[in-house]
Image (cartoon, rainbow, N blue to C red; front, side, top):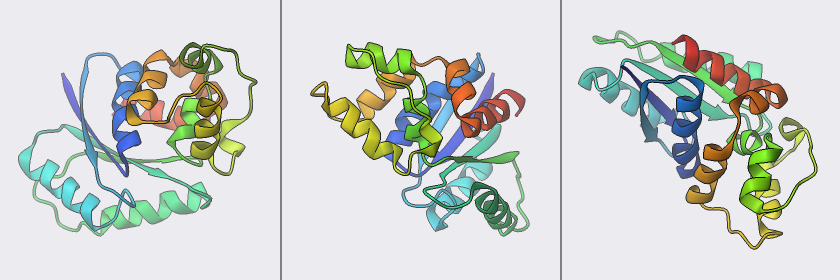
Length: 182
């Protein structure tokens, strides 16, 4: 059984990404590590080193939100930061995925999942074109008197169809392919 570590910034990422990863590839165990701030800041690099030294994972995926930054430029920058880890004694395969604009765009992509959580249908939009998908998701949930929490985020992810998300969010399709291929 593949032990996949996912390193991402926040509590919502830590609640959602393991659920989605398990939907993308059956029979994996996911270790989610929250680094706060940038997924390749000082804390994230320390988490990667610790995962490599402990051998608790077989591979690592680092997920960073684009948050308005050009995804291709960010991908190159993050790859460079990984190279800065230098001479690693126990290197694991590490892949970087940039969520456009943030992981919440992926949660907005499956109208069926949102309808099940909200209890009412919602109008489709292109979630990766939204400047602030998290604010949009909070606004949408508030119409059903639901507060956005990590538990609600996980519930949406559990109801989600990864094929539907991949069709509407190219950055999620990249995540899905990395999980399947690592």
